[in-house]
Amino acid sequence: MNSGGHAVRQDSISAITFMLLAIFLLATMDVSIKRLVESYPSIQVVFLRCLFSAPWFAAWILLRNRKLFRPARLRHHLLRALIGIVMLYAVAECFRELPLADAYAIFFAAPLLITVLSGVIMKEPAGTVRLVAAMIGFGGVLVVLKPGASSLLSYGSVMALVAVVSYTFVVLLLRSLGRNEHSMTIAFWYTGLIGLGTAFFAWQAWVDLRWEHWPWFVVLAVSGTLGQLVLTAAFRRASAAVIAPFEYLHMFWAVLYGWWFWGELPTLRTWLGSAVIIACGLYILFRERKLAIGDPAAAPVAPD
Image 1 (tube, helix red, strand yellow):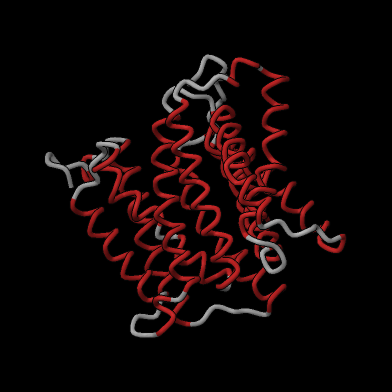
Image 2: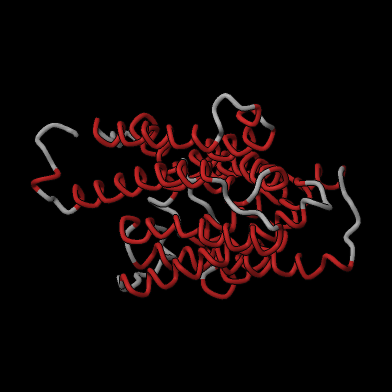
């Protein structure tokens, strides 16, 4: 961590509480994005998302420690922001085309892809058992994508897959940056660079903001900013193995919001595929947790 970091007392209960709040806020942000892309270009929504958040992160740094404005590895921040632009644009396009529950079901494949690629990129080999679990999880993604149907290669599905792949690299770069950067430094440069990177394209495609949409812009600003801050608070108070499983509660909010605002309910295929993906993701998380605490039954001599 950067010298500006402060030790935080580890507390699983508060971490889980923060995580549950973060899931609600970020799911609410996704609803606002899905609502706004119905009337505005995705690149404009991405730009506004960052425009609303970056000043708050900057204000926090100004009040706490201005040294946090100085990144240790600017090139890594630039690369992460570039991939982040692709990811956020793909997410917005996906939300435009797919029901929330279907989009989330595909997004849930991200931890599985991280498991596969972390060994190659981060030199953190997952082992045979976890790789097999990841492969089974990808089978669940195919179920959601309706193999053999025209929707397998629909624009929305392709955008969801692009979002998953780009999110994987954003997370892997975050792991790398997190070794010597403060979380607020990472958040500020990520949102700031994406805002700058999308400004020109957003201006080219700009659609004037309408007054009836301002409540959704407020929701986007508040939920996006608070969600990022609360998520950071959660991960600072407990390990990922403790709180990451709660990520799957996004599906609860996706179903509720999808039914409430759009009258959409997941199909049986979506439920089945989601169950496979979530089960494999939880297995990988719990397996990693056991290995991390040195459980003899879960830690053979050779990598599993």
